[in-house]
Picture 1 (cartoon, rainbow, N blue to C red):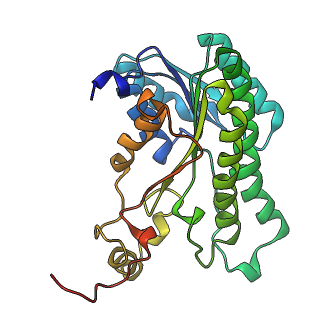
Picture 2 (picture 1 turned 90 degrees about the vertical axis):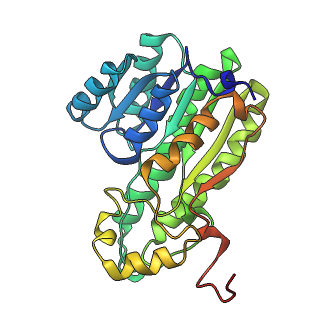
Length: 262
């Protein structure tokens, strides 16, 4: 297989929610493959250190403010990105949030916060980017989902609803925009240690429990996602759209403790 299939040189990529966590790993993976970046956060000044890190590697990077719960903010970000680079090739819809509570205790406001951020925000960001991609008949949209798109977990009702919605939304958008050369896929991580999950990882009993249910017997490390995000952003995945790529160590197989030994 030719290496150029994974080469992102000359491409521009938006990565939302890039002030911390997996968003930064996605951005570094794409820039490492040759892409120039637009990185976003609700507070632009939180991107400065990361901006310097990317620029040191030789890639161009534009930090922009973005609140995905604000329609005007989405439009301004995309217009500024397009004005700066003259095109948008790749969107990684990574901005998200979570409220971890028993379902009986979730408030109306908490439900709206999670769904407005993870689902409505993802749709309107994808829409704004696609409007720039359609005239060029090219685009790669990667909606960041979760293993909760196919599994349900207690204490995560709004989050699971939003991630299940991302899976269905991406299938619809893939059908809608495929005629314009735009692919839309979901990259769905399993259990990774991030700002949203670090409290869980402080519980050794939980870590042992979840590790035992992962066939590869370890939680994910951020670099485990590098190949997947570059693949979905590149021409190597040109004939793949509407799909959910689970990077979860196999936990979505439904495996529990082995009952048969080698």
